[in-house]
Length: 90
Image 1 (cartoon, rainbow, N blue to C red):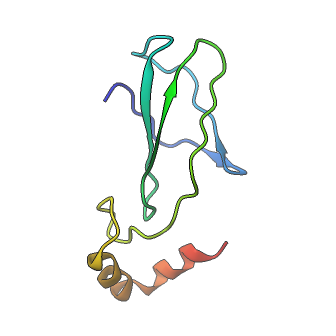
Image 2 (image 1 turned 90 degrees about the vertical axis):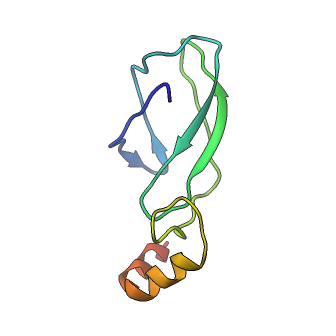
């Protein structure tokens, strides 16, 4: 891992990260988005010195046990924690 940032505010589906350290311009990097109870999303980007933009596919609230994948354990967790169904309100 080269860089980690938590607590990014998201507004209208967009987040902003500034002052990224330990990278070099023109380098290809994998960017992973982790949100509690959602399946992770990743994409690759070549970072430039100026403004960079990366678009991720839609995130789905299907990781109820927060292990990074969707399986039968997630369904069991959903049964034990029915309040997690509120994640599906769009």
